[in-house]
Amino acid sequence: MENKGAGMMKKNNNKGFTFIELVIYMGILGIFMVAVVTFIGSTLNAYKVNNSRKKLQTQASETYDMVSDMLMAGTEVKIVGSAYIKGTSAGVDTYTQRDGCFVVPADKEKVDKTSGAIIAEGGLAARTESIVNGGSAACYDIAAVKPFTSTDTPSTDKQTMIDVKYLYIKYTSDLTNDGANIYTYCTLKYDETEKKLYVYKTNSNDAGFDEVAASKIHDNSSAGDSVVCKNVEQFKLQVNPDTGTFAIILELDDPQTSAQYDMNGVVSLRNSFVLKKHEWK
Picture (cartoon, one colour):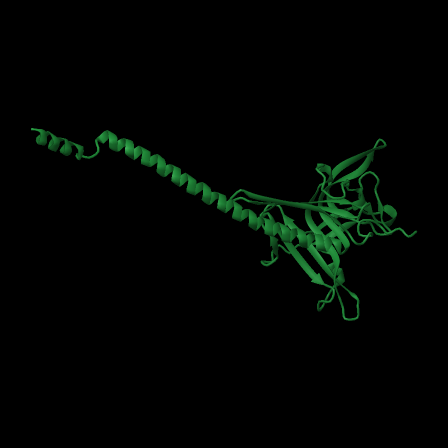
């Protein structure tokens, strides 16, 4: 009888899982699998964001270095976009946002004290700047743009921000064999819709070089190889003619991964006459 009972117990112990036990085990396994999948997904997403951010950092660094190098060597700068211009109202200084081209006036030009617009000699007509394939823009004195005051960091004052559409820079890029300067004429175009930065360049030693044509602001966005930076959420400048400095503000965003990278800094120009007329003492 004793042996028979022991045999029955052994048989009962090997009958397998009950339905309730199976449901419990499957539930635990399901929770474990969800945790594993969530962990893998989170890790993969973090990798994608980190990888995307590294790419944005590379793009931002290369673009910032390119723009800052050109500005430092610049001999002429023109900005087409939107900026806050100094004027007067009832004897009080005011700043009004205006769209146009911000330049240093020529010797025979004067500036309207109320609007900041550059007027031709005699006050007959406001000066405009030609944009190849894009019409023209009314010109304003860059010295009338509200300046940023820091010498090492951009300002957070929104009125000092210049929303850039075109940035034209003429700069010394090389020397000829006899020591003469070679100039590069560059236009950077920022397309806010496409979130891209385009470039156009021509050199003074190129065959068939035309200085009049080169001095215009060029829109080269239709050329397939003209993109220098993608995913550009913001491209802004700040200026201070008194200190001869620009602040560059660059923000890149990847909409697919939500990765973001910001790069900004202050650039000092080598030539003091680029942002205001040279005054002989």
